[in-house]
Length: 313
Image 1 (cartoon, one colour):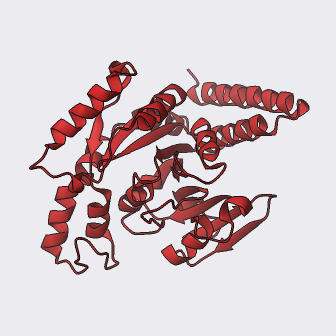
Image 2: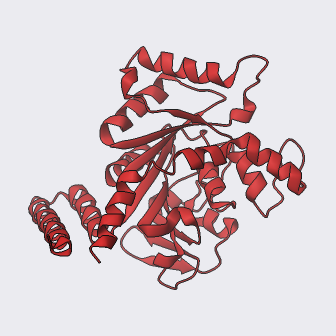
C-alpha cells in the first residue's frame, strides 16, 4: 500500500471539505464560523494540535502554564488577570527562529517584541493593560520548551467567571477551536455548581479533557485529606451529571512547581531564596512531575497521528 499517497489523499479531501464549508459560510456572511473553519484548515495543513486551559479566573491557569514552561512568563494576580487568548508555541515556529512575542490586533495589524519577559508580555495580555481586550485579538509567545514540540500549542484563556464583557465568549470560542482541554479547579474553593456546569459543558464540546485540582498545598491535611477532597468533587459532580463521564482528577500545586523551577526569586510562604534541596522538596510536594509523567500518554492519539505522518515521509 502507498501510505504516503493515501495520507496525502485523505488530507487533501479534508482540506477540500473545509474549503467548501468556508466558502459556504462566507456566502452567508457568517464571520465566526468562517474564522473557526479557517483555523481548522490551517491546523490540518500545518499539523498543529492545541490544548486549551480552562477554569475560573482564580484557578491558576497562567501559573500552571508557567510551571510547565519552568519560568514565569504569563502574569498572575489574586484578581482577574488574563484578558486575551494567549498561545504558547514552539520557538521552531517563530518567524525569527528565536523566542518572540507576537501581538495580533483586531483589524489585522501585528506587533512583535524580541524581549520575551513577564513584564513585556503583561502589557499585552493582562486586564491591567491599556484596553487590552478591546484592541487585541490574541498574543503568541514563542518559547523553547519540550511541551511545545511537534506543533503543540498550549492556550491560556480568560476566566470563565470573568466580569469583563466578552471574556467567557472568547474562552468558549477557543474551546471550539482546540483539540483537547485541561479544566482546572481551585483547591481553596473546589467544586462550585458553576464549576460543574462549565466542566460538563466542556466535556460535551471537547473530545479529550484532563482535570487538574490546583493549589493542593493550601488544603490543610489536618482537616481533610487530598483523597477526601477529590472524592467530594466526584460525588458533588454526580448530583447533576453522569460521573462515568468524569476524567481522572490530578491534584497539584502549580505555584510550588514554578517556585522550584524558576530562575526568579519568587516568594513562597514569606521566603524567596531556596537551596537546591529545598527546591527539590517543593517540586516533589507539587506533584507536577507525577502529573507530567502520568499524562505523557494523554496525547497518544496525537502522537499516533504524528508517527503515521512521519512514516509517510
